[in-house]
Length: 191
Image (cartoon, rainbow, N blue to C red; front, top):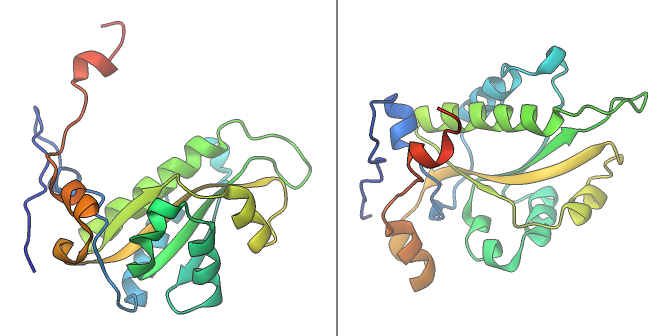
């Protein structure tokens, strides 16, 4: 397997786990190490949330299960090209209203923090994660019988890094493309 250095070219020193984290599309189609999956989910569980509401829920679909097939069916066609090789597909869900119907305006933000914690823990443990917005949220909600107050926001592919050479040419090119971000001067306002 060809290993490509994907370390981010940062302007300032950041934690190695953040600088080295990236979102590959090449996955080794293997069964997940359950201990590592549990650690990633535990990291999500302990992320901060407004009023400690913890408005995140996860459908954890392991490869080879009906749930996994349901998540794959809900993915956009482009994501169906590579995501089925992941060990786990996780539907990340925001509890946008509580059981009494009171809206939680920070639910999606809090879910994002939980998924970020999951991502960093997984990376620290040698797994890779790729978050996808390209999926049919309504189909996912229907497949898993979610109430209207539970909103699927993203799908997370999680597993072991695979060989990018196994991807088709377009995906392989993306896998090797230089990493780039907007400069701080474009994202920091008013200073």
